[in-house]
View (tube, rainbow, N blue to C red):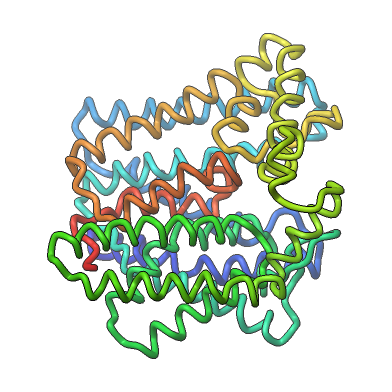
Length: 416
């Protein structure tokens, strides 16, 4: 395959993401299928790249490293299936295989695409991020506005996720790509585009009911504001600082008026009522309530999983508990790095983040830390949300964007 053809394929593949997720939601809701077209196409793409990597001409030493790397992944996969299925039952082999491939999609794709990019010198563009972000917003806004969107939650809490199925995964995509979307709105310098873009974003964030994107918006605005004020002080552009502060004053004045009417606020109130407390400050006085309200009981699940891990066999400690553990308290923690450790054991954890470290170390060495403000904020959100909400590294529909974020970095700074 020619370099230009491969480069075009890699740069256009991301555009099918929203449509794959819509088809996945339709297949789940209509046919109740667990293996969907979204999983199939994304894994086919990864397998295609692995196959292509094997055909790429490399030096003898580098080709050996490629074969060893692929072999290590494949060997761990087989051992993982043997250990987990021997303990949980071989009738669980499909669940274990699918879950393992979903989890390892991120390091495998990151390592494979990095080696191809380095060898073939292909350029991965991040121009598509803001356009894809707009597609996700549009496919949530339209059905939610018409009242035909799918529910974000199955019980108790309210919210609509548009034509998508997984509120967690779509929220993760909206969160980590948000800095690029906001930067694009700012750099367009067209008032109607900015107003429309901000309206769509705010409407979606207020109707889906999840907290991850709201947290991300707060982080983005705070960090962009700090960057802007620092630059404006250096340039003595005090008028811009004044306009910005006036805007913040209006925001904090009117926010308390319309926030109680939103799905996001109603879900907070539902949670407070469930915990039988009257206010958020009351929650902060009790560690158990903090875990339940802020971390959605992730600390509790972590503690329970640790107890299961301590009583597990030596093989399970090395290669992981798997995903179909029979005990009722073996629910995923939804803190990605920690889930990798318990579900894939010491060896799986070292393999997973060992490959990630190798690639990221080379990327940071090659770029010499010359990342734009937008990229730095996005990287920070990836790290923060991986621990806080999960579904960043372990969901292929999300982790593929993380891969492209790392590999398509640019030296171009945000112009404030």
